Image 1 (cartoon, rainbow, N blue to C red):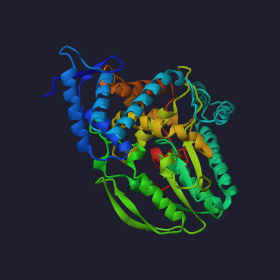
Image 2 (cartoon, rainbow, N blue to C red):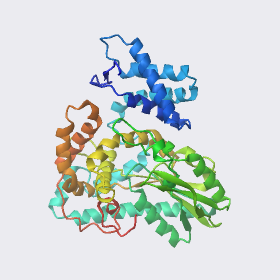
Image 3 (cartoon, one colour):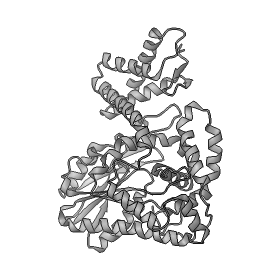
Length: 446
């Protein structure tokens, strides 16, 4: 039994020590450089604990930084130089982002072009939807159906613009990538864009990259048993690249099939070939991640990024956070379609956000076009569906050092929704609305 019972977090909070966190940190670093043997990570974690017990004074509670120093030492001493480098680089990256967090928290985004932000903000001001107070006032005047129509029109115009850009690029485009963070509305955007391009005479062939997941047992887990599907290394990127190159060359490939119920991938499952005028369509969380399409020429790719770029100030004078909109979308969707409790979604969100900040957000400036999927009318709809949950979670997580992230998000969203007028009746929302992807009642099949 380990002599170390607690650790000191960066916030100063003292929490129970858990060797599984060390194992997962080592395994994540190994996965980043192509390693998939969890048993090696477990043996190395045992060595870390042994070294900590030998070097930690009896009355001293080790800090997170001290434990990470020992992890680096053990990795290097055991000849895992590439894994050690990945671990060190990731540790350094997290440190830099912590320093930048306060500075960036009041800014919409450094990655979205300011022209796009200005366009969305200008639209919000023109439609009297730039603050929660103005939104509530329009709802009080019975204008909720008008808000729905205005917001949907702006979103659809964005997609139309993207389709026209693709058409202008002619025969050069062989892959259209729809990318964006979790619950940004990629699926509905993909369907709508597909319909528009089809009318232009372009034939689209979807490639579902979710079928390229590694087996579930190869994914990292945390001490709560939560699997991390959010990292691009969860996908067999090398195989995706190989298949894309061969498909563009006119060859037939047999794409794999991933069974989410069993967590197993079955290779050489489905034959696929594209014609000379076909375009491969990829709807992927990590479509902008360079390694996914590294072997395909840039001129053959059209990359579209989607994000709910809502420009609306909340009751505290700060802009509504896009990540909070997506969190609420995912909660109602997972509860409705995946039998996933909203509380589990909240507790898992730190994985989602960490992966976004590392593997999605930095690549936004490589996109050809950005679609705004932010809908002002989703806030009153989410208020009616989720507010009681956030009331409960604020109390549940208060003072729990192991759930600081969940508490922070719950408190912030609770404060926002508290100021929003709830709308129970969703009948003014048409069946082709992007929001239907999450709340149900869509005319599209997902």
